[in-house]
Image 1: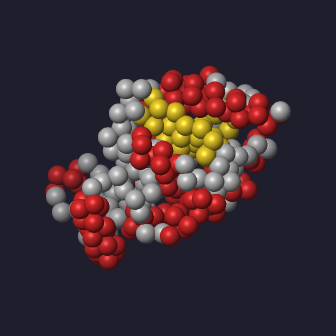
Image 2: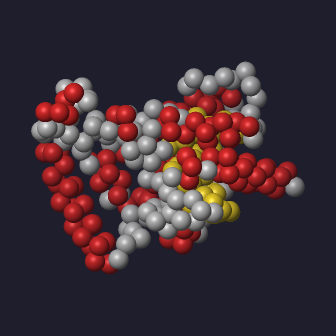
Image 3: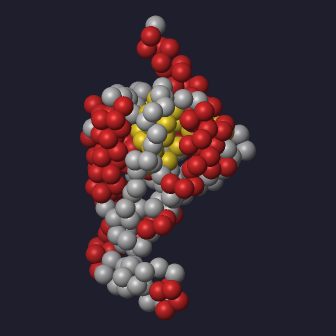
Length: 252
């Protein structure tokens, strides 16, 4: 996974970024956490990251990549890692915790989304679900259609296919998230930006507090949805402080 295992870290962490993200965007966060004794592993998420956006992905593929990374970290370090999910990646992290709780120490979440209760007006939410239902049926066909604009071929390899929403629909319409949220008994920590307009702090907190063992949360002042990139050192400090408190609580 490209890490230097000669150096000893107090905590290992596997990271699942949000949709359209890419691991290279989080170098500041990686450095900030390393200074605090936390090593962040960033597995390649085929078809889900920005650099491979126009390759179809499935939720099972992303979860499979996360599980492979978790297993590899334990094999290399003999330590269970924490699972860190950001934005849409928070849904993957929660899903993973529901399915494989024995393999991780707990959850670190940057925002959290409940697909059944979106932070939108009732009318917009109904429209979104209608659109989602249509895409659920249409996406298998859309996924086979080549991107129609000639200029696009010069930007991406010619064999790339139009981005399919199958993975999103598979994730958003899966009942296991809603049914398993309250059953998670792993220690969990939430990070939000105080000025996040995409997923407002109050909404995220209301979802987060439904977790079976939600232990802590923090708001990064004057930060938006991209807080992990705009305020990496403040985020790193908050995570490290919470982990230290958790560790101390376990010792006492």
